[in-house]
Length: 168
Image (cartoon, rainbow, N blue to C red; front, side, top):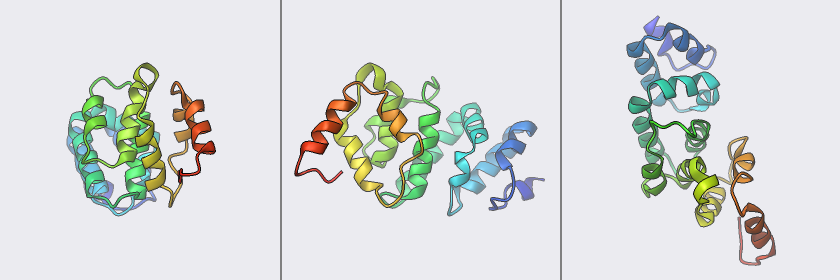
């Protein structure tokens, strides 16, 4: 079973199976195997959110390191950013450290900022940078939803639309 769950294939409901089995050693082995893969889109599955919540101290540092190893604007970084966004409010994740870590891609840092956006707002320059760097593919599906929860987002969008220098 371990070998099968650790194979790099997208034809299985890996995260759902791992959630049901709930063996921490197997979960971590399968996570490590998928994280080493070329395509991380299976992390969009809600069951991966459940697994990352349950194993955040193990998985979050590895996810962050993977984004550091990716090219700027990679789809994999965007996938991980969406996963982080979906974990917003999770108290076991050190959101301020992620927000401030300049070794991380802007898309990951802005996903972490959305965790506290309603209270403290976000860095709109970082948001614009993330949008520019990830223009080759769509930002995660609920990125716009995340943005409109931030105070002053309307003013920011209006400034961009009126600016001749903006290339966001």
